[in-house]
Each structure stands twice: as structure tokens, then as C-alpha cells.
Length: 319
Image 1 (tube, helix red, strand yellow):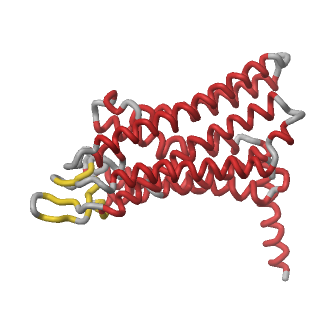
Image 2 (image 1 turned 90 degrees about the vertical axis):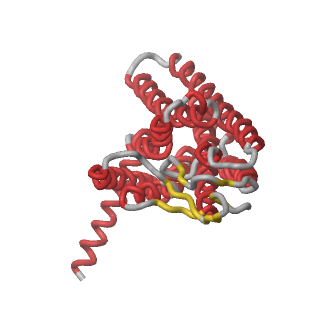
Image 3 (image 1 turned 90 degrees about the horizontal axis):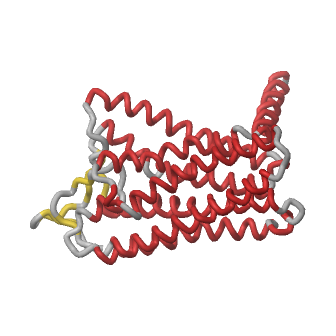
């Protein structure tokens, strides 16, 4: 990787500019985003604990959900702490650290794209082929799909970061963003970034449109199957669940598509940051609520776990 230079002076770090707001608002925004970040960690940790501790939740759907929760804890943690630092002081990051942050976040975000498609396909099989579902979605197949989703994310973004590492950066070392994203970094490149940009565009098209298309197809078939069920509470619940899932998924994929497939459509850097917040902060907040915390089985598993802990504490107190 070539060094970053300003004129004849070699530098070793970038500065993340974050959000342009009044200094008086920095502490307030720090508190707000800290609470949001804590809720993301807590909500997803509760899901993982519930799935691991409850035998009833050892099914493909909850296995995928636990992986999604673990993934979201990791990828929000790769971005949000540095954003929070920017509200309190100048957020400096080394060149290697910047590329590493982009690699980790990008890999996990790409893995989530594939994992969400796997989850939609799982629901399609469960609803449309209930009798054959245990055979179609066996343990080995579930594990294989998850491994493919994770590895695909790291392989795709590993290629992009390898191309980025060949670029020479010069001029100012300020990144007008709250984390090391692709387009802001490319705007600082002195050498020709066209290969990296074209590669990223092609990979973004594939990794976003193909999984999103699979999700839409899966939910479309689910809707058709649900329409065959007599009208009642079960149909209303199914439509409510599908609409909630699609709303969050569309927000996640839509914001990524705008920034990575059609970045020229966003003419304001502030708007770019708002779109970035949608997939880095907003969807990880709502995913635990939409996917599982509204689910009675997860709630019952958490209550049982809480009851056992309280019982152990009380019994231990007697001795």
C-alpha cells in the first residue's frame, strides 16, 4: 500500500469530519447515539441468548436470526464507536486502520445482504412447502448457507480493499464522513481509481440486486400462498409480518443501492451521511424488534431464562 502524502509531507492518518453541527449539540448527539448503540447491542444479545438457551428455538429460522444478530453487533461496532469519538474530539484514524474499518464493515454488510436472502428463502420453504421443509432445510444445508454468506462477504470486500490499497492518496487528509466509506476515500485518491470504482460497481450490482430480487420473489410467493388461506387472524398476522420485514429490508438494500450503485443521484454529502445512517444504525435498531422480539416464542424463551436466573438467585440466597 502506498503512503498518503500532502505535497512533499508524508502523513499516516486520516481525519473523519463526521457531522457538521454546532458544538453545543455534540454532547446531545453523543448521548443519543450511545443509547441507540447500546440498544442495538442489548437487543441482539438478547436474541442470541434466547436462541442458544432455548431448545425450542433450535430451528433453521432462529439459527439464521442468531447469525444476523451476531453479524449486526459486529458491523455496527466497526462504525459507531468511531462516530461517537467524533462528537467528543477529532476522530483520527491511520491509513491502515481506515482500510481495515472499511474491509470489516463492508464484508459484514455484504454478508448481511446474502443472509437476509437466505432468511427469506427459508420462510418461503417453511410456508409454501411445510411437509418437505425439514428435508429441504436440514442442519448441514443451514450451516452451509450461513458459511457461504459469511465467506462471500469477506471475499467480495477483500478484493475491493486489495484494489484500494494500490491507490496513492494525496491532498487533504480529511474524510467528509463519519466512517471510512468507499466514495469519500476515492475522492482523495491521486492515482487513477477507475479500476477500483468499476470493480466495486459491478460487485455492488451483483451483491445487492440478486439477493434483493430473491427476497422479493420469496415474499411474493409467500403472499400468494397466504392469499389461499381463508381470511382471518392468521392471514392478517402473516401480512403484518411480511410488510414489516419488507419495510426494513427495503430500507437496508435501498440505501446501499443509492450509495454504491447510483452515487451520482445523491448531490449532498449530508444526504449521503443520512443514507449511511439508515443501514449502519437505523435497520440494526429495528431488526431485533421486527424479526424476533415481537415473536412470542422468543419472548417466552427470555422469560423462562429470566425466571430460572431469579430462582437460582433466590435459592442461593437461602444458603
